[in-house]
Length: 70
Length: 153
Image (cartoon, rainbow over all chains, first blue to last red):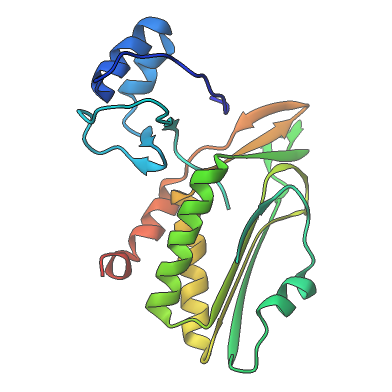
């Protein structure tokens, strides 16, 4: 997985869990991403712990595989 | 000071930035690109480092603040390179400064152990022009977890 980004339009009052469903339909790779326990999710630079969190216009979501810097 | 950069850095120049007469000890960690062998025909030619910069800066700032607080550091500098790096090139520099050596040494080790498992940076080995992601090492995670007494306070 390499760095990449995409802007997507979503309806108001969408939760992160619902967004995951949309992404799975959009690209099957997300079935693998969301199954992988080692992938972490961030919303506006803060790790998502509760996947029922609601999203708003301008939010930035990141899917991060295990890091390997240093 | 925290910096993520494509450019190399000079150790003396960075040391001058942190040098102060109030410090009795400094500790340095310098990570470099190691020659590694995938198999007999494939040696690493270079590495590429990718970064989610805004998150990495935030994470490094938190780690730095935690180290300063826990070991009463006078100062702390962290530089991490990104982009394409050749064998032997500098990847990461950490300098910790404190009144006494023990705090500087412990804090420096904490920072690199933490950085390796928690900061949004990804390394790719380049073999024959092809990039291959470096696998996360669980021994690094275990090493970081040994600091749990520190990070839970």
